[in-house]
Image 1 (cartoon, rainbow, N blue to C red):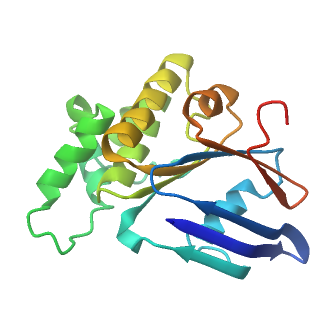
Image 2: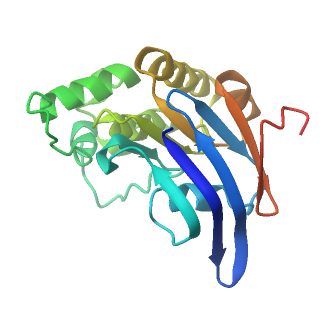
Length: 212
């Protein structure tokens, strides 16, 4: 078990967003969660990341540096004149493995996202697809066991989507990376999901299938 939720509930501004969710994610699984806007998908991710208070139980068998997060929006400020390599290294955390240096971490993240040729480029000169790959690379900088992704293919073209999906599948098959992906992208869910969830009305239906 990598993640277990039991009777998980969440309220915001007096409104119940999630109600008594219980599910379990095993190592190596790719979960996709779909649902209408406002159904609590992003709130669920933020609860798992410890960014929102909740009721119930969340058990995560993974240290904090073992979790990588790819947000829906980059939030890149025009006031931040950073190169791609500098932006990626903002997420680097030295761990117990003394051989895992910043340079090795950067090489690892760039290798798995194809960003090697772009490391010296300004973050403000990237296309939408390149920015999304950069966010994934930053999430990979500490070799996480668990990737949490919020609408990772939103607002990028079909070619960039296909490349992004291939990257996720490679990480799962070659490194047994576990993933929890919130998405509206049916193509993404169809290609990568091992387990499917549909969130609506505060309830989570798991493995409801495409028809649901």
